[in-house]
Length: 194
Image (cartoon, rainbow, N blue to C red):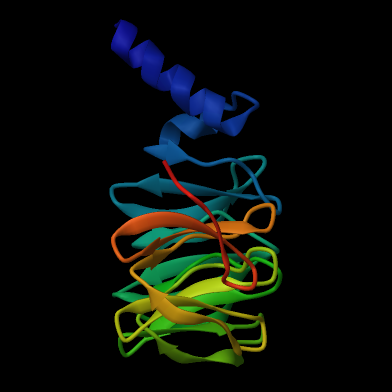
């Protein structure tokens, strides 16, 4: 009995308002852009703030809205919905991440690149892995090494790291020659990581 009540409390907590419709789903995410991701029996869709189903439970995976767009996956391919629930970027990518600063990381044919909200590739699909932009730079992996590019896709810090993290307060943590160090935005070492 306590377990059932706990599950109900958790579901109610996700909605923020304690609506009874939340019990109809296995999970309910926070409402963003007027819609919440809901899931039941391993399928996902979106409901409005009143619990009305706006996007049917047809997706295998779905992300919370970011900048008016939500990444969704069906039959092994990712695309994006707008805040009305309309599929505006077709289900054609092998992987996708949320939009940040109007840019999303997506992959096709094993390579990662960056698209805008119109589904235009703004940075080519040339990377084995990629991260979102932070302080104007993104860590990307090419030929097994990490480096940094700017929003024009220009190499800014050479591809020489075993791993590279995001910039925060002008510094990023990287792995170079089996040692963790901190670098600045020019790629210069500014300290060791203990």
